[in-house]
Image (cartoon, rainbow, N blue to C red):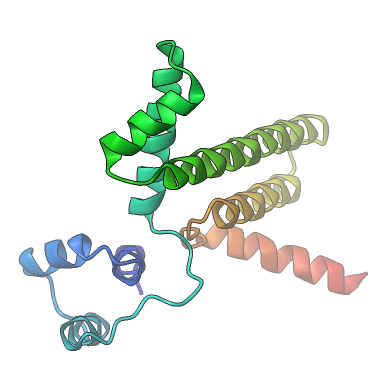
Length: 178
């Protein structure tokens, strides 16, 4: 399945049908996989899994809510006042605003850890030489760390490019030799 198909299926599974609609309007070939997806949608059988990750739309809304609270606080409002005003503006409860602030704080902490890990990996690459194996190993470590970060913040990681699969296979074979 092509990367574009992956993104279309992932978006549809998360409830965002816009990419699929755009694909159908473009006149692209309707492959058996695409046809099956359209049939599932029309029959109402495409269900999002229980205990699923938040959709991109939800994450964007949470970010916008948290950003608005921070804007109001920078303008001089107290936290409670900013939360109440934001809840009114977004048409949600104060609890939803507080949850969005908590989630945003968690994402910021994860991003800070990610930044630190990337800096450490870059330092190791500079001091460890430039041989191909070392660079592939570094690329794989970065990729695996980013996949973990995607999952921690509630996103689905993009498909892994071939080079990372190749590097992972090479590393596995090196481990088996030991």
